[in-house]
Image 1 (cartoon, protein in one colour):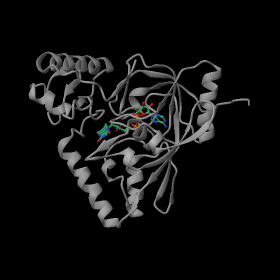
Image 2 (spheres, helix red, strand yellow; image 1 turned 180 degrees about the horizontal axis):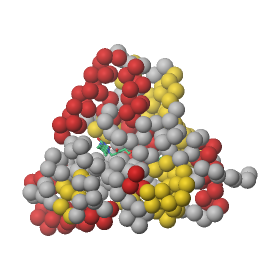
Image 3 (cartoon, protein in one colour; image 1 turned 45 degrees about the vertical axis):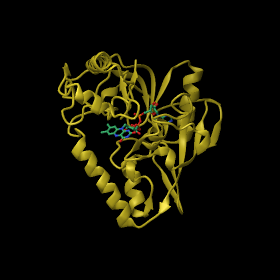
Image 4 (cartoon, helix red, strand yellow; image 1 turned 90 degrees about the vertical axis):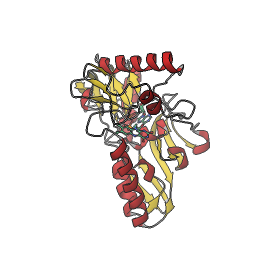
Length: 289
Ligand SMILES: Cc1cc2nc3c(=O)[nH]c(=O)nc-3n(C[C@H](O)[C@H](O)[C@H](O)COP(=O)(O)OP(=O)(O)OC[C@H]3O[C@@H](n4cnc5c(N)ncnc54)[C@H](O)[C@@H]3O)c2cc1C
């Protein structure tokens, strides 16, 4: 099949495509408008030996200041939602905020934990995103994905979900469609649960600054924020990057941070935690070198 891609842009600033608002340019950038265009893009990259990176809303990814010397493929235009009774079928780029608004209207319960997570459903499945005692593994029925050659489907049990991890994090598989199995409830109850969760976020997270959510994973069940806070590291700064005084597991970009500021601050935090508590913190956020 002859592959022609008209929508590839050159030298696109990745700071505009991630919630931390740092990072250099993507050499090539595309937002496919259909699953076919997404697959064609992958095939084009493979044929032309161009490396590629699948990006959702960039809320868990930090690109380097040197940018990305390949094709960044952003899924945000693949945003269709279909509802068949209690099964909700989402294209990978569906925004979680939009999805939750739709679920409220349709009185479907199960995804309320994700209200306020600024990601796409594809990113959320890849990361097994979770909050307030629930995670994606509790609601995903099956996922349709492209393995680089063929479109395949795997059911929940085969997706290797674990804490902030799934089969998609450790492979080149590209999530195309996610089937969610939800529960019929009433509109008011679903909405109230969403609003309660959003309020908890607004109180406990520094949402007025650019950030990437939690920087580190829990360590043996203990929140990294607690560990960092107890060592008095809130307010620690490198350039424009700062450990939030609201939530110690958040690094905020005060407006002029670089990716390298954030990396240095992450290393300083890890070193101090290791020295003083003996704990090795592991990043939840993904740095793309
Ligand atoms: C303010 C704030 C609050 C947050 N709160 C939470 C929280 O409560 N719980 C939580 O778990 N996370 C939280 N996060 C982190 C983040 O929002 C989630 O991990 C989110 O699900 C990532 O979605 P995304 O679309 O932004 O993914 P991206 O950051 O764009 O990508 C994340 C990973 O998913 C991969 N990916 C994306 N789309 C696909 C696809 N279609 N196929 C295969 N791989 C794909 C990417 O390659 C990358 O490896 C928060 C972040 C912020 C900024």
